[in-house]
Image 1 (tube, rainbow, N blue to C red):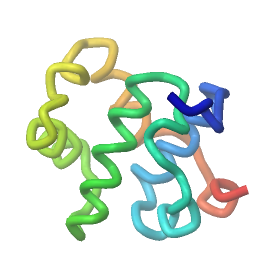
Image 2: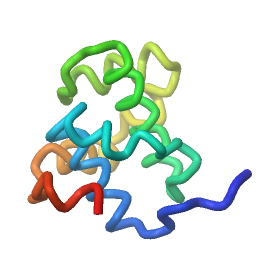
Image 3: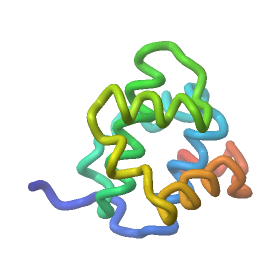
Image 4: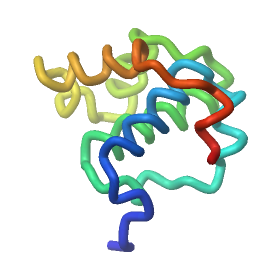
Length: 102
């Protein structure tokens, strides 16, 4: 496994929150990212789902994230109380779009 690039959970959360909230606008600035660049398995799974949603030209929403997780066979990994709370927080995290690619 390659070494994680981010290795900073707050940064990982900010990146995921930015993609959840701003979708393709932010993702195009971060298109070099790969799931294995995230150090936490849950963040890898969420990023994989977000990538799939964007690649399918869909809007990123709480429900579309879970539908995609089901499609990708990772639904059971994110359908837990703690994970649900974390994912919900990504859509409410205070993040300025201009700060994400930096």
